[in-house]
Image (cartoon, rainbow, N blue to C red):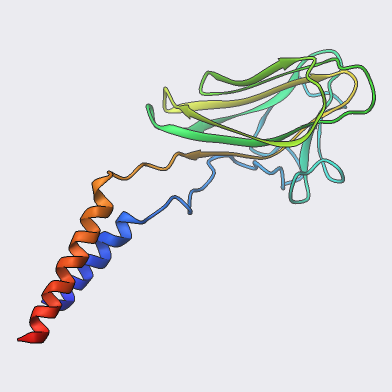
Length: 192
């Protein structure tokens, strides 16, 4: 009986204090570590767009560079999603400054929601962008579109993960209560 109660207490405590630390990205090749655009659909790529090493990556060996000077180019990927479920979309983006005039535009979206867009965006170093977006269908498109006539936009470490589900507020209290009951039962048995 004592071992069953202890197992129940440990099980409830594990559930109560579990986290989403083991969340897995649903994006294929989000770090571009294949050295190419495997897993991505490309749109209007020019000789100024590529997966590259050197200065491109935020982490790892590769990142993606977009510098099409006259028309938007980019990549997209369809992600299997559950409608009405919230997803965390994150990526690192860098608008590199090569000393020229600012002449660019960008648009980034997921599940039909525009996450980031702009025209004549001032240069900035690698920055983490994170968004919570609810899926509206079983297939959600993650799309990046860029034009940069004087420099490059770099992206890396692209991720889409299901948002952690909040635990009911009473669950940790329930686990604590079960633990207290277990200790009381153990003390009673010891006295008897």
